[in-house]
Image (cartoon, rainbow, N blue to C red):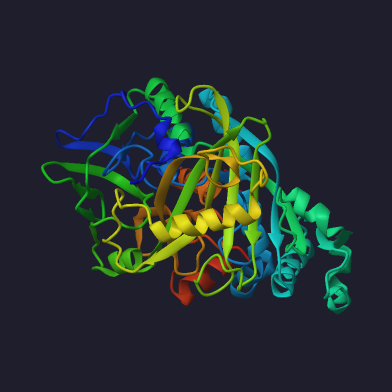
Length: 488
C-alpha cells in the first residue's frame, strides 16, 4: 500500500484549486500551505492591512500537515534539560511558555473562523521502562518546576528497583503507584513500564483545519488573500526593496516573504550579500521519514495520546537506542465501513533522509516499519488477546490506513521563527514539525506581529545569528521577557 493518510482522506477533494497563471504580487508571500503557512496568513490578515498570498508547490495541507499522527502537544523534540544547557533556564522556560500559549491561539482561530471540526483536549500519558529514561524525565520536570512551570507529578512503580537511588531533589516530583495502575493508564497489558508522566495533549485533523481556515480567509478577506497551489518556486531573489519569486512561467513580487516549508524545497535563495542565506536555509534542515498505521476500533468517545519508551532489548526493532512508539485515538467517521468509529493511529518507526531531494510522497510503505508496528501493537495494545475476531489484525482492529511523512528538523531541533539576521525581508516559520502543530501556530502569530512592526526580546526560536549580533540583542533587552511583544 502506498501513502494513504486518514487526514487527507477527509478533505474536500472537489474544491477548486487555483494556480499562478500570470505574474502576480502581494505585500507578503507565504511559501507553504501547511499549518505553519495557513496560521501565518491568518494572523497577518488579522493584525495587518497587508495583502497575503500563500504559494504551495503541491496541494493545500498535503505535506507533513496531512501526514502526521494528529497529536497536539507542547513539548520539544529534544529534552528540556538540553534546551537549558544551550540557552539557559530563563530563555528555555520562556520558550516553553510561548509554545504553551498556542493553546489559546488555537482557540482564537477556532472561534473567529467558526470552525466546527473535531478538537479534543485531555491528559495524555507517556510510559518509561528503564531507570535512565525515568531519571531523564525527572530532570526535565525538575528544571521546568525550578523555572516556575507547572509540572504534573510523575508516577513511579512502588516496586521499581531503583527507588532508593533517586536523588533527593526529585522526591517532591514523585508519587508512587502500583505497576498495574501505570499499565492501566497506558491502556496496555504490558507491565514493563516503571513510570508514567502526564501532560495536556489534544487531537485534531490538522489538514482539515487548514482547509476550513482557508475557506474562512477567502470569504473574509477576498481582496487581500489568495492561495496558489501547484505553483513551484525555483528561485527566491531578495533585493533591498522587494523580493522576486520565480514560479517557472510566471514571477511573483512581494515586499516580504515567509518560508513555512519543511525545508525540502528545490529552490535557491539569492540575496544582495550572496548565498549565505541559501546555505543557512538548506544546510540547517535535516529530515526524518516517519511511518504510521491507522486502525478502526469500536467507538468509545475517549480520545487518547499515549507514548511508550521501551527497553533497548525489546525485540520489536533492531534500530540502535530505545524503541519509541506512540498511539493517538480519536473519533473518526468513515465510509469504510459506514458508521462512527475510533481511529487508532500508531507510529514510531522512521529513517533519516540523507538527501533532501530523495523523499517521494508516493513511496511504498516500508514492510519493515509495518512489521515493527504490528509487533508493538501485539505487545502493548492488544485489548482482546483471547477473542480476536476472524479476519482482523492485531489488537482486534481493522487496519485501513498506512501513511508516512517527512519531518524537517533544524540542527538544534528548535523551530526557527522570525526574520533572517542578514536579510530583513526574509522570515522563517519552519523546522521541527515532528511535534509541530502548536509551534507552527505560535510561529505564525509571532511572525505576523513582527511584520506588523512589533519588537520581541531574544528567544530560543530566533534564526541563528553571529555571536556579536546575539550579544547586541541581549543588551537591547537586558532582562529576558516572554515573547509577548515588547511593543504593541
